[in-house]
Image (cartoon, rainbow, N blue to C red; front, top):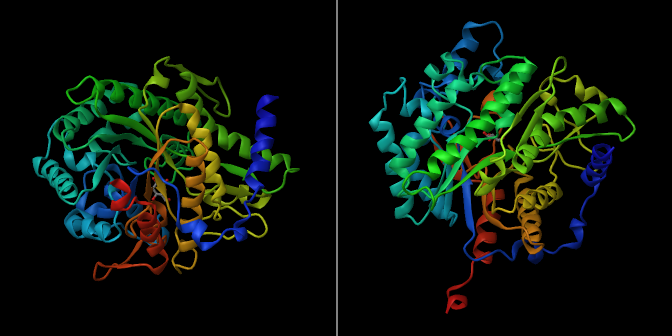
Length: 464
Ligand code: BGC
């Protein structure tokens, strides 16, 4: 009963809009933000360096298989190639961050490049990450490291990846190794990016490797990813530098909402989706209890009373929410709709800044600092980006004013990049990339990000 009421309230909340036209340009660009706030951008090694630079992970193999196999699931048969060659161009990319006056950068380690064979480390790849951290430091940019952003080594995949609980030890070993090397340079650590998305895409929709559609197995992988987070958290905390490190997990809070309140099919579908995508995850970190309902058979249950203590911060990825009508349920990849009067992004969801406010206020219940680890818009025409940035930063400032302890914001992404199954068709970048020349140019709609940062920073006279 309680859940049904909560669902209905969420539905109403999803429809509620703020009166944006009452706000002036000044309201939107002069925000009250704590003075040591981290203003950043985010990336994922595979998305920004591609299979040619990161050839030892499961995604690189998956891309190849898609050609050999019958169905090629990546849009227009694209391949990641060198993507934006961030691996070799990171120094230039750091200058692009400086140009926007960013003081933080979230990036991921490619485990496959670092440990291409079981137990054998590639010290050149490790040096690459040391150099990257040093270069960031030289420019006064705080690094935030993600230990696993969707990709893992092929050898780990062959062993069954996170389908096998006994494989978690390999992930812990890798994390400890990299923590020991980087801990003197890095304080902020994200263990796993979006476990529920890995589960949904890899084991329910079957669009990410390993391309399975198996709900009971999805539940097992989900449980193992949550278990892995806590075990990594505890292992890193026990190492030198562990107590000082801030270690968290990253959750994508995207919710499904029904286009019509009266359609029990779409309401029911949204309920089920939100359970597997959000509620199971949130509940685990609130209560230590995980429960997963496959269609048939017994639910998968797992309890870890320590889970609520395994978070030094909560990483929130927020893009929007997916509105579904009857038709959309049957579309491939959950193609979404929008409510009347809303504007779609290039992704299958609309611009919905109010949702960031609600998600932040909800995340505050964990009583740990929050980082907006991803927020951005795919906008090829660049005619919605400015509005998107201004409104999302505005609602974030309101959440802060209402007591939410938000410590940083990372726009997704600094540059365009390889958007998984959407290939290069989704342009999230503050900087547009010409993939022939690798030239980066600042998008007009992105420059307000710099203005807002400048306005929010205390001037030197405020510090005296
Ligand atoms: C993922 C990114 C992805 C972004 C935009 C996030 O859920 O972490 O890898 O590019 O969404 O779709």
